[in-house]
Length: 342
Image (cartoon, rainbow, N blue to C red; front, side):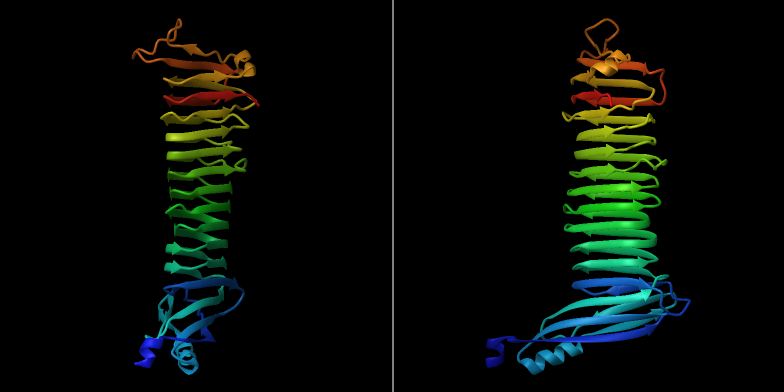
């Protein structure tokens, strides 16, 4: 009775190190741990080293020590897959961290994690659902992560497919292939992406920078948020609903922006030639003096040649600027369009 009333009053720590073989046939390691921090580092090695650090509660010091030592990692090899699962004793409460060193050629898979994850120098990464911070870097192959809340950073990977939930804050840099984002809440800061970019965003602040080297298509579909692009020099299409959209286009390239709602489209136009086709309905269209001098004249629906045909106030500007070039198409419903020269 005294044990039940008093509860687990003691705690103890234990560390175990296990080394397992990594034959050439092994391609992927799956990690199963309900809660705790995980660090995975790829190295030039031929085996796998797993350090398990455990803190366990217990009724007294002896029990806590025994429970900490009873917490272990069990391994199950299934062809090209090695499963490493943390197994807990029933009494007490255990808090664990895993430090794992693997051959660089292995991919890492975690179906669910709840804690800080750090993965570096491996072949690929798949995370089914992640809570807590995630840091992924230097991955030779594909990275696929679902992140719920908290923060995630991804740096220097081959390709990326990222889904976020519950307002995660995302930082991405140096994706050498395609990048696909499905975002709900929070923010995305991304730069130096070399491949095609696809974004589906809701209630998210989306910002891309340092895209000067990208020559693949960029597609963004955003609702109730903000989209900011800097350094775009490739074909881009943005569709927004109630979304503030700001684009800096240093060099003329094909650009299409469609926006519904009261939020505005702001474009810093390229310094070379392009063809402008801009229309706003029930909003305002403004161009600065330099663009107006280059031929970007704004015509309202109540002016000659400016009829909208639907009874709503409309402003448009259509011109071949500096001799023409790639077409920049801007459409706004209720929102303003603002055009600035460089």
